[in-house]
Image (cartoon, rainbow, N blue to C red):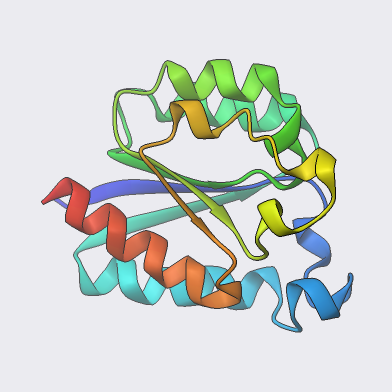
Length: 145
């Protein structure tokens, strides 16, 4: 039986491909999930994806992943910078957590330079655009090996 990896997508990521393409590119969230899915399958991992514009939904997803999923990849969007309840939920997860960003938050506005997710993440992948999604799944596969 393959291990399950939860891919969480935070607020506004449902607008990828339309919203600020000069920053986030023209690929949709579905495109990114498909790229991650291909890598997951190549490593015999099962990928589950959940996107929500509501922090509580993401917290609930992390709670449901405890004891069921082997790892979490999270692109928390703006929640990266202030989502303390998401941080607390992730801190309760026992497997690897990879924080993911399409852009490089450290090279953007000052308020984006702090991540409340980073202290509970095993690794951070940022600034590589859509390439970050397959890289995150490859990293998870290596961490789980």
